[in-house]
Length: 268
Image (cartoon, rainbow, N blue to C red; front, side):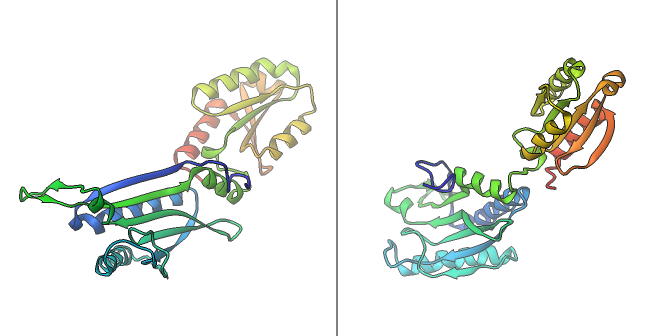
């Protein structure tokens, strides 16, 4: 066992897509575009391995070679490079493995596209074609994240816990200077919560410097420091976890800034 990387049980975002032989290249490319969309959202790059026929396999060599050529053609047509991982395919077909690179230079095999014409044959799957006759479909097994638990571990270490705003468990922390701002802090938190943001308050009887330091160590993206002047002017004094003081602004302006950052999936 090892943290989130080797757990007692795990969940996979596994899916199986059935298609005609004529659709194989298009479906593979559509799946790769899905991978691109997901990985780029997290700021992750990847390399591709084409895993070929293992010694222990089902199906003919000709079928394997044909399916391997289809995988090669699909990603080559997209302008993507790959390396051959000889003999490491699944027992039922060749596959494309996607190895993610994190900020520490480590690689993690997460996504995979496995091309399978054997199991539809064994399960005697069929569809009615345009010609009215019965045909055997082809299937791909595809996983984007792989183990969801391990992927969470990967991005946690990739961001060193400093998740982008849209991903942070707590997006905003409201910190009071004195207890005279407690009611205003609660009002701010309630408004932000209604707007769909994840927010906490810190109204402890502690010095504001300690509250800021602890929120920074918790890697909360934004801190709202509220004191007597903020209560009077109905403003918030905004600080980032990087130590930048953005000054006083209205809650409406701050919420608009949050919304833009969340909607655009900014990675700082």
